[in-house]
Image (tube, rainbow, N blue to C red; front, side, top):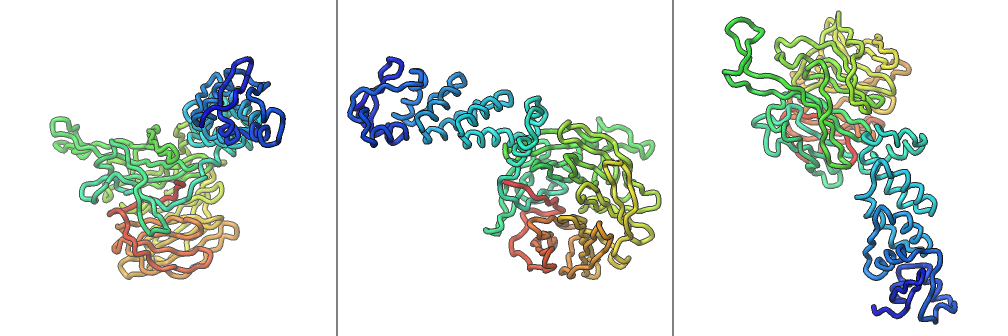
Length: 483
């Protein structure tokens, strides 16, 4: 488009096309289409803008390129508002992707709110929410109002929530292709897709891991098993002449799906494996398990409970699991003991003389209390998963030797157990054992067939088996995540 009008700003002329001005600016559209005297003039003077600012905006009008920088940002936003150039807002937001920082974000919000540019305000909160935990540790975050803090946090949940899995035993030899991949399930396509890979140092001999999600940050915590060459082996605790072939290293990672970024976090104090990891009130609780060096056959239950504060990134000790008269059966495919959380309380299931007992831990009081005897008789000894939905606790269990499964619900308010409609036989004692709730439905792995069973918790109805094969072999960790 050939320039056919001169815009004069602070005495500096800018040759532009009327057609481009009308297309890009409501201000000029109103001027040229309303029959104002300026519509017939060859030179039009514009007030209230500097020539430097209009030069940037003229570049966008002519070429769709907005050459804004940090020094000119405020003036450009004011110019966009004055000339009513809505098409320039996305270009301004594109610049903010590289310009924004935790230090200047509030200044940009103030400028955008002054001119009622909600899109720019949303873009700033989107930037802050994508790195929410890092931002929460800044002084800037502390100056926000509570509703602004919640608005930042809400960005973490803007995507769609998916069922996702990773290998509980990590990248063990023979576990199939794509051993480092984490997968999510696309319900509409009935297909598993990879959304990230474990970090490089998890590439092999990840002996065990547990997972939890806090504010859509995924935490994978466990131990790495390293082989020691013969000349490096220390003496074993088992006695003279024995040597240790392996040593164990904690492996603790946080994954941010909004930035597709892995970060290491500090390890817990008590090296353990086959433990339960529970998310509760901005923290992770590592409960039970056995010491990292132990085998399943001789491993002693670890009574220690540790809490990880996701904001300060520090571990602290809590009251240990009271197991003086209880037993904990350690399984390679499940977390031990079975644990979940409801509201502000953690519940765990222990056994004693063949019976099951539910205990609860209150982080506020740092105290364990007895809650209720369990609902399952000794003839159904295997507990696959304990999980929660809304205010209720659910236990999924069974006896694989007799092809019998059971699911029961516990209401903490009235302390009542209710048997639900029996599921199909779940032979998952050592294979693909997982259970996770998504949108009111329980998804559980059917190990030997590598398929998914789904149970509607509200309707108490099993909805059949998906024909989609699980994406990996071996015991799996399942969780939900927004992508």
